[in-house]
Length: 207
Ligand code: GAR
Image 1 (cartoon, protein in one colour):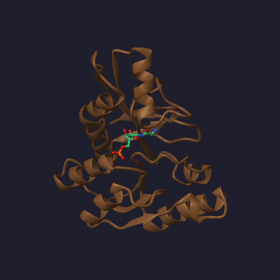
Image 2 (tube, rainbow, N blue to C red):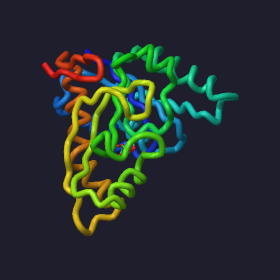
Image 3 (cartoon, rainbow, N blue to C red):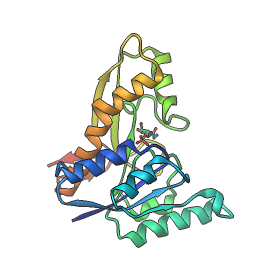
Image 4 (cartoon, helix red, strand yellow):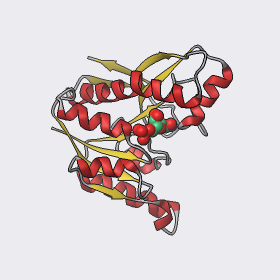
């Protein structure tokens, strides 16, 4: 059984999509062994509690330096025995030690079609503001493995979503979540749980 640690920072709708997909067996043979939030009091933690999943807050403000925070984060993931780490709206940078310890075993969901609207400074609503500002007709979401860069790792799944003329950043964000993120993130985890994913350099093969 695939053991998953899910890292969150906010509302946790992607976490919920994973919880629901495990419950209804859309994701085969997996369980969430730990949810970690860098923020206290976020709704994602409540979602974990309701589902009976162990949850922890590991916040940079509780540590004397970034290095101590990173050590605590990696330690918690290792202790949990996770095989796969899923960044589900986790807005802190992943330390290099963790990328190395979990090479091709950390997944991130990003709310655009990478390589558009990604990299430093592009997170949450800012991504959708930039897409609307540029006037794109199509946006979407990407699930990729995490490497040492920001949103630069091998791409596993992408799904396109239409941008409508009256969209605001919030309406576009919600449509991309509903039509893309909440589908491709569970689908990606299921593919990994079934052993169907092989990473070859910057490319990903689905068996
Ligand atoms: C999601 O839209 C996710 O794609 C995005 O944050 C949101 C979290 O929502 N992540 C990023 O922007 C990462 N660069 P959630 O807490 O409801 O899952």
